[in-house]
Image (cartoon, rainbow over all chains, first blue to last red; front, side, top):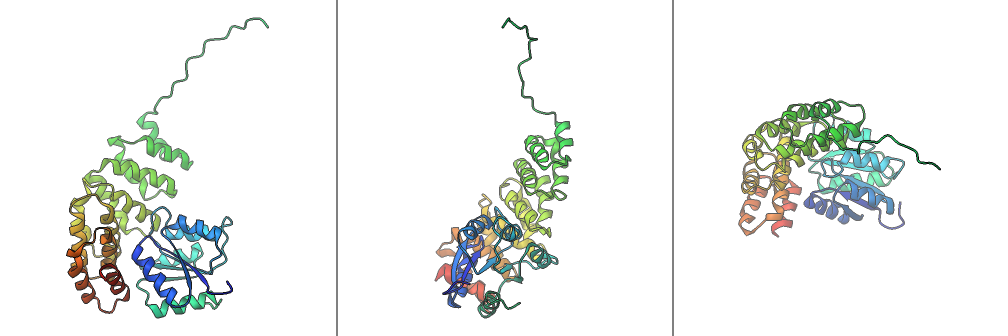
Amino acid sequence: MTQNRPKVLVVDDAATVRLYHTKLLGDAGFEVAEAANGLEAVEAAMSTAFDLFVVDVNMPKMNGYTCVETLRSETVGTPAPILMISTEDRAGDADRAYAAGANLYLVKPVDAERLARVARMLTSGVAA
Amino acid sequence: MGLVRRDQQPAEVSETPAVETLLRQLGDPDPDRRREAALGLDGVAEAVPDLLARVGPETASTVRDALLTTLAAHDTDEVAEALAVHLASDEADLRTLVAEALATMPGSVPAIVPRLLQDPDHDVRVMTAMVLADLPHPGALTWLADMIREDPHPNVVTAAIDALLPSLGPEHTELLRDAVGRFPDDPFLRFTVEAAVG
């Protein structure tokens, strides 16, 4: 983890969702960067050591599962925890997220208190 | 060195493979060959049923992308109906690519939008908002407004609001505030509306 505030990358194609999660995590004491799709996230991860990724599922160019798989691949190889948040709660989505390499899968909307609590747990190495 | 007589070689001619060849190639084990076939069948109406049949089982994202690009160019009711089924897919890659393809089909998709807006699966309605976000059709904004006004699921309403954002005007303020009133306990919806209209 970084010396100061933990760094989080919020990955979502919806501008309002990025803004919402950025505000909630910023208010909770995190340093937050944003990516609008999976490709941007992978590029960001190759140049910055993030402490947490918050990743949407449905995104253009590279969907969330592929993004997580790429983040966990040898090419990027991030050890940071990954939280996937989706508007959808289909059976199997969570399993797919964990298989890709996510640490936790939540369904939107996630309220401020819960998101902050989960982010703190994940970035302090406590199993969620 | 003496002169060497060479048999005259015919000039190399690049020929487009026959439709039957390309249809067979859609089942090739090599994804590059399948992709090549899918793109090669661009504009071939008789290939549509085969192309549609390949969309679901196809596992390579690049091939799916090629299949959907070729199919979307047809922009027919048959293609729109068949592709829309995949908006309910359990595969994120498939449903996202299909939503992107449907958004490029303004000729045929409008006819199925009313049914999609009534789909009992709210996840399908969320994907429909994604389609409408990019569909170049004069009715798209009206349908998004209808979703915001009437859909019973907050995630569908927030997806519709997000899709409407680039076109948001003062005329939408009351619509958005009413949506907050319908879902007073949804923090994200409230935040989204406040960010949009202040």
